[in-house]
Length: 320
Image (cartoon, rainbow, N blue to C red; front, side, top):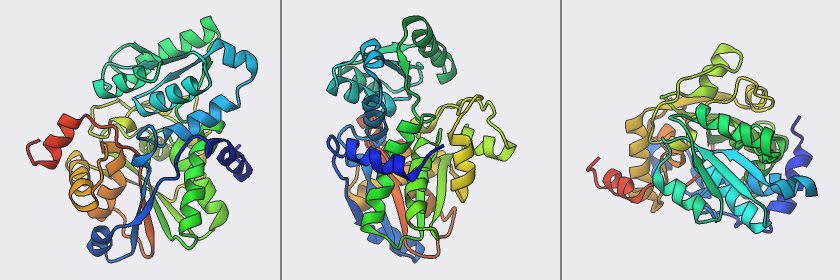
């Protein structure tokens, strides 16, 4: 499955095209929970999200025939933006399939990077059917937003960056959806620091990986609208990698409510001077609301900033 060496190789590929995002001490969160807390500000990444890491690594590992046929993906926004950026960088065709629940700002962001967007159905499962059709009928390579070893390894480069700055880290709070991010980060961090604990954080509306882990197998979970829209969607009943990797590498999973996510966005802006989307705020929200009390130095991974700015204004001004 996933090897630490896969992440090291990915770092050599990915580092040429991304920025090494800041890792900063949060005085506000440290005071709130009584332990030292840092923020890994991946919301400051080139495309506003960590997804570019996995996308670049996945496309770089395609063979010439696959690159010629192009790539297709299912996305709630950030994976699509990352894949569009990577495909544009390497001059290959890219189609992103999305449900009609995806915010318009994320759709326009993908189009601006040169990719074609197909809006299909009312949920990600319906959009998945179109992505599967393009793969089977037109020969395009499907790049999963999470269940792909090259994607997971690319996301794991975040773990290498965190360890370089805080080698004696005790806890990592990481947003959890399909599992690509948390599996890569956990593999990197735990390969270098066996005592570290990784805590997954998801929303309490339709948390597919959380419910699947409880059930002991991948299951269908109804998708619901959430401020953390980038975390919505299933993990796939035929999940190949991230279900088992999450089971092996993640020490606990906690859930945050919509109000707690909104409070996390509010805190990020007013106390940390950061614009973050709902998914980017869940790790902060979990610490603010003491969902899991760390005993030692922690990092909260702030994974993205791609939020509708009118919605953001409403949340930070208390008008939502």
